[in-house]
Image (cartoon, rainbow, N blue to C red; front, top):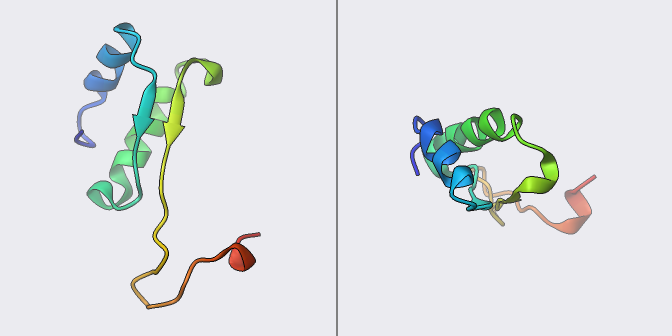
Length: 69
């Protein structure tokens, strides 16, 4: 899914597709931004949004449960 394809998300919802999977790494975060813009038009309980975070960042630091507020 491309970050410049919000019409695809609208079409998916119209066809009762409710699971959307993304990650910050997809198009440098633009995919998550696009999904947020499109999905805010729908009730929150009408879709499932899945995302992922890396276990290591570019600066070689780690993401663990202790660093999450």
